[in-house]
Amino acid sequence: MTDWTVNQTDLNQDMGNVGKLTEQEAYELAETLKQKLAEKQIPDSNQESLKQMVAGLGDDRGALRLTFAQSLGSVGEAAIPILCDALKNSPNVIIRRASAKTLNLIGSKKALPNLLEAFTTDEDPVVQGSSAGAMATIGIPAIESLLTILTQKDCSAFQVGLINLALSFIGSKVPDAFNQATKSDHPEIRIAALTVLAEQIQAKTNPRAEELLLEAFQDQNSEVRAEAVTMAGKTLESSDVHNTLTTMLQDQSAQVRKNTALSLMKMEAVESIEDIDNAISIETDEQVKAVMTVALNQLKRSLD
Image (cartoon, rainbow, N blue to C red; front, top):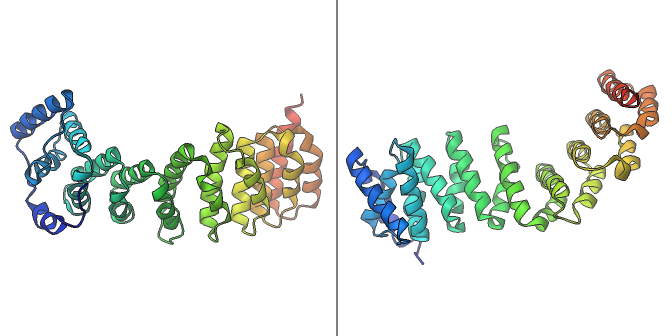
């Protein structure tokens, strides 16, 4: 196993000298590597060979980049330091993108700090997406880092979406990994956990998912409650949740009341027509009343 710290100083000095292969050099090297891969041989992992393969990640030809990525992936953990250094320091965005994708192939938690840094600091959306994908592949060790990013004020909507995708991927592999996240002190984390639970309900992979989702109806944070009723509308049957969900039509949050009406409509919960009608009669927010009216009319039409 390669010691991360042993060669890091040399790598920092050498990264700027990775250079660029000529088209012919890249082609010839790729052909050699392709042959080794076909014969199930692991490419050389000395620094010069690694530098050449990383340089090949910047080639304009996608097929060649794939060969270099697969070759570095087959080298495994020995390639992590130079790939992480390229991810952080290469001025070539194609190399940074390919480095993140190659780290995804390796899937080692040793790369987690560098992937996290790339995700939060690299301005290229492909680098961010590939870094998130690599963290998803790493799995459970990446959960805490991904959830922590959600609590940061500068976390963009794009990053939130990538994190949710990564967490959903991890949740599909380790169903109970997010049960405790529903009790987090941070509402952003609780909301992310609900997204994972909703997918688990649909996939029937977590026996506690529905229970935890319904518990979120009572969350102290209105945004969490709003997400919970929305997820219920997407994943649960009205016959199973009707009585609990209709009580949310009286929630103190206007957004929760709107989301509840929309969820009942989506679930085609015709048994809730009277509940929605009663809620409209006492609703003081005109926007909420308008949404409830749309839901009510849609449900009535479904009876025709």
